[in-house]
Amino acid sequence: MNAEEKLTIAVAGGTGTLGRGVAGTLRSRGHQVRVLSRRSREYRVDLTTGEGLDRALAGCDVVVDASNSTSPKGAARTLVDGSRRLLAAEEAAGVRHHVCVSIVGCERVPFGYYRAKAAQERVVEAGPVDWTLVRATQFHELVAGLFTSMARFGVLVLPRMPLRTVASAEVALAVADAAGGPALRGRIEVAGPETADVRDLARQWRSVTGSRARMVPLALPGAVGRAVRSGALTTDRPDVTGTTTFVEWLEERERRG
Ligand SMILES: NC(=O)c1ccc[n+]([C@@H]2O[C@H](COP(=O)([O-])OP(=O)(O)OC[C@H]3O[C@@H](n4cnc5c(N)ncnc54)[C@H](OP(=O)(O)O)[C@@H]3O)[C@@H](O)[C@H]2O)c1
Figure 1 (cartoon, rainbow, N blue to C red):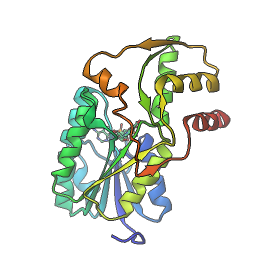
Figure 2: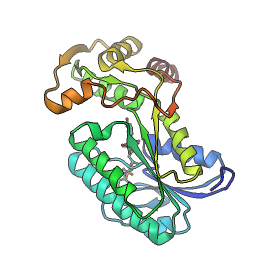
Figure 3: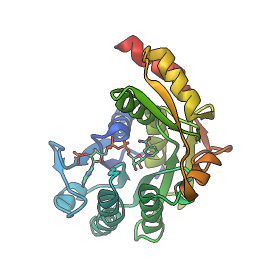
């Protein structure tokens, strides 16, 4: 596929935080985009059953999988088994390129959701369709959302954990670039411009939002604690580096209201 070619691209999870940005970027570049999800108006699909996939993928050149489910059962059914179903339907439909969105360092954190993401990557790498994996670090949106949820209880419970958070809009650009290009049978890693401990991110969040939530340190035990403390979810050498810092992203969000 050359960069100028106009493609028909299905975005599974195209109604989600990342998927919306991917679908919008691809449309703005002139591609035909189909948004697939359980609540999509156009292409209702359920990755846990395969319902709707055949119709949704007929005539597609490329599939981006930006679906997500974070509960242990949901992650296994949607991300791992769902990828198998999606890839089988893609093979039947003659899809040429599968772009899977994953997480930097997921294989280094022995915890349910990250294990499922690493298993999803293996399914894609061994699957029947040529692939590209775009791995991102945690989105600014995710971290701000977690702080907001905890602050409703008046506290921010914070393990020590370096993160290199990134704006989902910048990840969406990298995913759209991958979807418009050739299948790499390899990985692209996307990260934000700076690494900061989650406690520093919480301080920044309190200062921008004016929250008075109390910061409570948490010592995460065991192998998961050791992994995240040692920076398992970050990278020093991303292939693509976003430019928007967490503070800049927060300030922009506050300005927009
Ligand atoms: N959030 C982060 O910080 C982050 C960081 C790095 C990488 N990622 C990766 O980025 C991807 C997208 O994450 P996100 O945070 O944007 O997800 P999200 O906002 O939770 O969106 C999930 C999407 O998946 C769809 N979906 C869920 N279950 C489905 C099912 N059974 N069948 C079909 N569609 C289903 C949802 O739509 P319906 O509910 O309508 O089905 C929605 O469109 C994931 O692969 C995630 O691992 C996320």
